[in-house]
Amino acid sequence: MAAKRNPGALAGATGAGTPIHATADGTRNIARKSRGGTPYRITSGNGDPFRIVVTGRDRWALEQLRKAGAQGCTPFKNPAPRWSAYVFNLRELGVRIETITELHGGEFSGHHARYVLRSGVSPDWKGGAE
Image 1 (cartoon, rainbow, N blue to C red):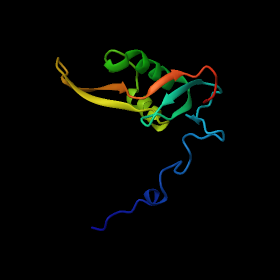
Image 2 (spheres, helix red, strand yellow):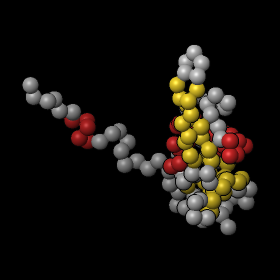
Image 3 (cartoon, one colour):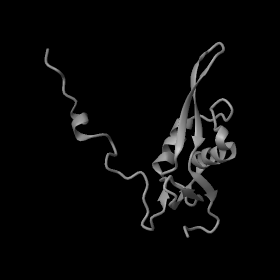
């Protein structure tokens, strides 16, 4: 039997080539319908600081990671519907976040993620990089 062709696969995914985030001034932003957001100063692994602006659940997740420090966050202690998506979005902006897989017991034993912030993050109240 001949294999069926999927013409959609040849054309690429819907929205392929559309930027997730970009601004003219070099500030990295997660695209959102709403205006504004909270600016943060991020220090990357090489020590070069840069600025991001985040809103909504991505901002909430970044604040949870900041507060947790070296202990990190798990969906058990910091419940939210899409932790992996928030972490993905923050990583796309250049924030270093480590994922540690941990085992857990109980009636529904298995494994879960612990997310640990590895970048320096501070609120950027000045509204720009120095």
